[in-house]
Image (cartoon, rainbow, N blue to C red; front, side, top):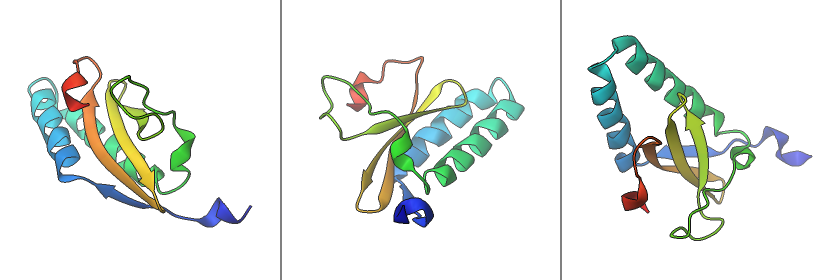
Length: 105
C-alpha cells in the first residue's frame, strides 16, 4: 500500500476559476453566506483531491470519451469536472447541475 501517502498536485484551470466566479456572482444576488459556503466548499474539495482523486465516479455522457473525466458534487448543486493524469489533477470545469451543460462537452 505505497500509494497511501502520495499527494496529487491539483491545478484549477482558468476556465474553471472563471466558472466559479460566475456562479458566485449569481449566488451573491441571493445570499452572501451561500457564496462564502460555496467558495469554502470548493477550496476544501479541491484540497481533498490531493488524496484519492480516483474515489469519485466517471462523468458518463455520450459526448465524452469514456474514462476521461471524473465528477464530484459540491454545495449540493455544482459539479466539479476533473481529470487525473500522471500524478496531477486538472479541474477543468465547475458547472451548475440545474443548467444544461451539454455545451461544455
